[in-house]
Image (cartoon, rainbow, N blue to C red; front, side):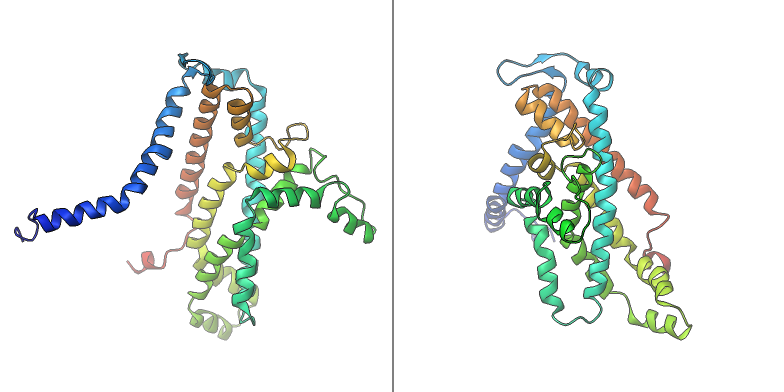
Length: 303
């Protein structure tokens, strides 16, 4: 055993080769994740404009955010509303499509690929521009409404509707969640449905008492990942509405961007970023803490 762990030249060479292969990841992590994280924490306690040296101001940025800046509460409210619309909408839509694809549908593989494409393309600037053309006042959506004698909707110009329109773009990117749900559906033992059928259970009862409980680990995973993504949403709100109208879609990420690159208040933007970071951590912890009451783990029951 001792000889097998000895630092022989061959083992040392193999370790160096391993370090060489993972060095791009290590360099990338240090340069683009750890350093910006530590630097932003330092700048959040300073007055820094990129054009001059940072001046330490203590907690001033954080105090100003909570006591002086009215845009902060508007942005945090818009971000929460957006998350409450987009995340449940995406998960429900993904589950419905996954159940359809799991029902012995012909060409299910082709449909799965087709439905997954929006997840790849949906976050791009090009798709956001396309979305803006679709939902503008004289866009295709309102033209279709006109053909059906339905009154046109001011999708992007109304403060009450614009945030919902932005959320639709996120809901449309349901492919990754759908694939996870589809994998979970395929792993549910068919014997459970057979036993429920013999007992006379309806389709609704099978869904509520078999499908949903067996999918709760996947629901938890999708809920956590999509909640984190929703709190960081930027492209759609920036390209489609640029935070308007009347700052109705001015999400936290847009507020951070404006303070950093429009007003050159890097210290203030860093403080906003850390507040958003803490909010995301808090929401994730809340979801995990409540998951003990609704997530079904098959292995857990065996003990």
